[in-house]
Length: 319
DNA sequence: GATATTTGACCATC
DNA sequence: GATGGTCAAATATC
Image (cartoon, rainbow, N blue to C red; front, side):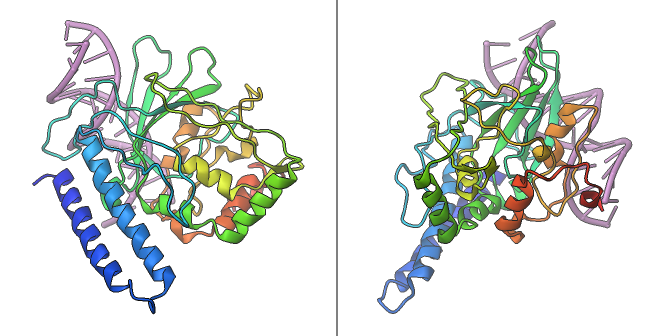
C-alpha cells in the first residue's frame, strides 16, 4: 500500500470515528464547543482525503462552497490537475497542465511570506527564462499529509517581481492555526473598522495560469494610519493560498506591505534574508526549523509582521 | 544528530 | 530528444 492510500485510509477512518464521537455528543447536555470541534475535525479529515484524491488524478472539490458556522468565510475553490505520488518507490510523473492553481506576482520589496513553512525540494533552470524556478512543498507534507506546494520564479521582465504559483491547499495545522487564531473579538474589531471605512483600498491581484474561472475577489481593507491590522485579512489570504504583493508596482490593485516582511514568517525560527540573492529571500520561509507555528499566538505574530517601525536593521531583532 | 538546502539524475510528457 | 517536475544523496546549518 502506498503513501496516498495509507493517508486516505487514515483520514477516512478518522472521519468515521469522529462522526461516531459526534453522534454521542448530540444529546442536549453536551457542550456546543465540543460538537463544533468534532465537526471541524471531521471536515478536516474529509478535506485531506479529498486532497489526496485530487492529487491522485481525481477531480474533486476540496473546499465546500458554503461555509459552516464558526468557520472562516470561504470562497469557492477547486483544485485541478493531477499529481504524481511522492512515494519513494512510485513513478515520478510529470504533471500535465501542471495543476498549479494560482499565479501571483510578488515584489521583492515585500513579504514573500504566506504564513506557511515551505521546504524546497528542487530548483530548475527553465528554458527561455533568465532565472531558475524553485520548487517548494509544505514542511508538513509527510508529518501531516499536507499537499500544498508552490513554485517561485523571478520574472524576466521585472527581476524585482517574483511569480509564485500555488498548488493544493494546506491541510496541516498551520492552516487550522490561522483559522482558529482569529477569535471573535478580533473579527468583531475588524468588522468595526471596516464599517468605519476610512480605509485605504488595498487589493490583491492574481492571475490564473490556466485561464480557469478562478476568481479572487478584490477587497478593501481598513488601515489605521497605514498600519495593517489584519488577522482576518491575513487569514483570508492563507485560506486561499494567496501571497503578498507588490509595492514596487504599487498600483491600486496591489496590496502594499512594508519591506520588513522579507524575513521568515515562521516565528521562533531564523530569519535568513540574503541581500545578495533575492531568490534566497524567497526561500527564507523554507530555511527554518520545524517548530510549529500553532504554538505561537497570532497577536504577537501580527505585531511583528505589521509593526511599521520595525526594521531588520535593528540589532535587537537578531540578538 | 536532526533538519533543511543543493544539485545531478531520473522519469513522464510533448 | 527537449523540457519540466521530482527524487534523493551529498552537503550545510543549527
